[in-house]
Length: 326
Image (cartoon, rainbow, N blue to C red; front, side, top):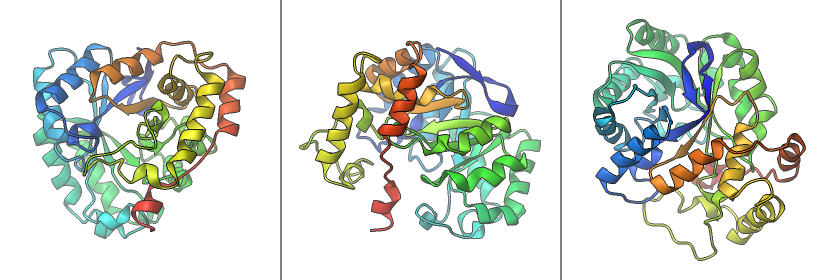
């Protein structure tokens, strides 16, 4: 495993992090003991950053069970404050609606209780819109939590592919990290956001790096998802054969010459730019987690191949256009 300093916080974190959304059951049902074991498996393999959220169902509670079993050095824990206004995912809402006064503290203290820790290393707003910057109280509440030692760092999670909405906040010096969508089909964060963060020593957490699993090549025309599975509508934004054709193009061009698997290619692509501090992937299935972790130690993509993939395989689709803008 390779490690990077986490922006201004300075902590060395694994370049591949454990994305704990899968602990909440959104990618299918799993036994709780197996989910706990999946966390321990990744920690044993050198992963030391875990990203969870109040909004991920039972994720924080299950992660707390795993942390109680873990005997090694405490991992870097990132969580997110749950929004009270669920309309704020597809489009802007007032900050008073998403995070009313006192809610940031209430959500944080609930996370601390479930995780069983005294301090959360990074607390992120699970929604963020730039017009909130003109309202002071939410940042003041986060700074107060930081002063009290309940959180170490402050971050935001960008709701969708509109990466430019965070640029002014990144430049303000008020935050420690930004979490954003970034993968082969959607490399837009490279245009402005990642270089801005690099210049301002703001950590970048890349998410959706395998495009909800699509970049592993698992999707078939007849693949079915259980009720409650996050992916049930995700891959039907357009006819599936269009997605499968684009994945096949990647496989034919770059596997196995530059990566053993599609997943390895996707991980190498995301980790190529030095401005990406860490990339989080769902690791609730140990077999897939082990394969993803192994990709970090592989030979990096040659620069011309990275640029070729970036320029000729870009295919941006916004999840929220299907969920909120029908």
